[in-house]
Image (cartoon, rainbow, N blue to C red; front, side, top):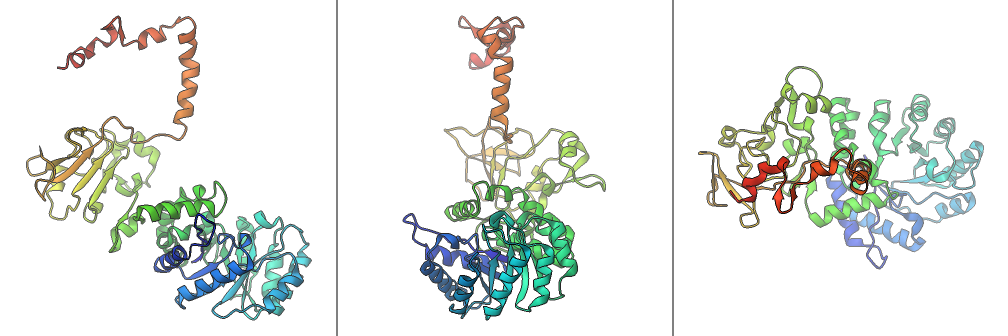
Amino acid sequence: TGVAVITPFLDNKAIDYPALERIIDFVIDGGVDYIVSLGTTGEAITLSAEECRAVLDFTIKTVKGRVPIVAGLFGHNYTEKLVRGIQNYNFDGIDAIMSSSPAYSKPTQEGIYQHYMAMAEASPIPIIIYNVPGRTSSNVAPETTVRLAKASDKFIGVKEASGNLDQAMHIIKHRPDDFLVICGEDPITLGMIACGGDGAISVIANAYPHQFSDMINAALEGDLATAKRLNLDLLDVHPHLYVEGNPVGVKGAMEVLNEVGIRKVTPYEFLNTYFDEPVFAQLNSRDYTTPDDDRPFSRKAYYNHPETFQNDFLKYSKVADILLACAFWHPKAPVLFTKEDALRNDFAIRVIADITCDIEGSIPSTKKPSTIEEPVYDYNPSDDAVEMAMTDEANITVMAVDNLPCELPRDASESFGDQLIENVLPYLLGKDEKSIIKQAVIAENGKLTEKYSYLQDYVDGR
């Protein structure tokens, strides 16, 4: 796993070197195999030559030989200028360079070939070809990549960021044995490795180095079941990193993680790794429920027929200190745990924030909603009773927030607006021919309407 390291900035647009040092240590400790400095994600194109040199020197100093360093600032459409720059560059401490194909000018395939061959003659260190047509506006055809790979041993691999698996497979099939095909699109990394690829130069590994490295390692070792599970853990994160272009998204993710100070890990890591720092894992339904037969997990089936699933949450209760419960639950679904489970010696959870607040629901400790006057209370599993908060270490301290939805669809506001315009406003502003408004009136002239008379005890405070 390679990581295209971000370049952090201060508010005054100066480079934030203390933050860069923390990021480098973070990704190396997270298990990445090498670092790409000043690539697209490192924003080399927005830095001066002096700033690029300073970032690279700082990176070399910080890495201290722990992993190889690839310098990613050697893309140019002016071949002669690029060659002169390479000939005059100090490559001490740099293990390879990565070079994107000429941008904007849209050269022919022969032109791309000659451009890279001129680089190979000038460079004293290995070269990774970088094919990113979405940014250069020209594709390095697979035939050209293979031709370069066979023409010079300076070319050790290609970062293939076309997003085209057919193209990647063509390179994989015809490449020399020691030529690497490296994925440049995080979301399809698993697919490319399954086709014979050799890993990735990743963006998301800035924020999730453990998870992404573990996924790649599992895939390279042929453990596709584990790789698939780890890949799905990050699947929903990828789109958010590119909404405003790379590296805006991943920088935002890094800022949030830095501010909170709690690292997110995969459910697998949460269960199988010892941490000496605060971490959290976000569980999907498939992580804590399993079908009661041999069929594969289906979220749709779980929602529609929860009674055909069984609970698998207790493995998390042995290692977690805090539970934030805000997941789907149905009266027919298996509970997360029982009061008997809470009495087990290996039940480690001692604080629960229950956003669902289902009394007599999936969590036995939720006996009543929290209030402003009493925001937390204790649950004593030995007698299934509520006690004053934090009175006994054997108790579970609970905050149960009532009247909040546990899941809010992305289009809820839009859907609500559509329904309001279509089914309410015409009757509110015009004739109420279908008694829509009349049926919605709870009180009139200071009294409950007949339809809502069942609320009288509540009104009377009883």
